[in-house]
Image (cartoon, rainbow, N blue to C red):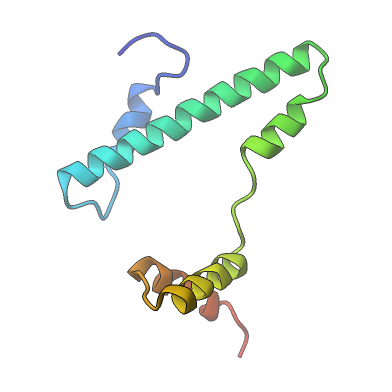
Length: 108
């Protein structure tokens, strides 16, 4: 590995290699690559925000807000899934898992 500032540390790569549920080696490699890309992008964003903050440029908080928006709530995600199911007439197992989690959170 190189000494580049956005190269994940070996401990983190080892942690990613222990993902549960990945039975196919290719799927595991894709997942590790995806995690590494996210980690590197987060490191770069933090470095940019820090530099802007040091230079007194107030846009650093807006940069973080727009480049790392909050994920949709379970309710928003479930409603979007329902729209896809109504439109396309089919669903994926992940959609059912999200809808089940949303329903389980509702009070009886």
